[in-house]
Length: 159
Image (cartoon, rainbow, N blue to C red; front, side, top):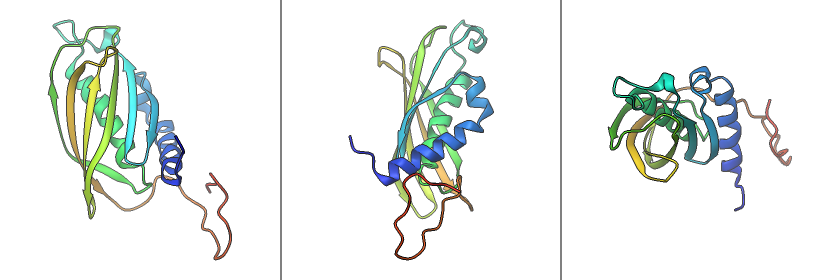
C-alpha cells in the first residue's frame, strides 16, 4: 500500500504525541499503525489492571480506546481534543490478553469530528466499542517547514 503525504504526516504527528504520552506508555501501549484519520494501538492486560472480578477494569479499556482516538483525530496535525466519549463493554477480558483498539474517523465538519473505536482481543473478538466526538483547538502538534514558492518540499522534514 502506497503511503500518502497525509499518512506520512499522521505517522509523524503520532510519533511526536506518543513520545510525550506518559500515560499510554506507562500502560504498555504500542502504536501498531496509523494513517490519515485512523490509528491502531494495542496493549497486554496486566495483573495491576484487574478489577475486583479478576477481569480488566473498564477504565483501562477506555484509556486504550481514548489513546487510539487521540492519535486518529490529531492525524492531520491540527490540535484536537475529546469533547465527548462513550464506551460499551461487551465481554470480560482476562489478564494476559492482548487488546487492540482501532479508531477510524467517520465524519467531520468544521471543528468537530466523529470517531468509532473497536477494541478486540487477540482472537479478533470485539470486547468493547467506543465513540468519540472531537473538537479542534488552536495550534499544531508538530511544526512543519514552510516551503518557499516554487521550491519542492523535502520529504519528512520538520522544524
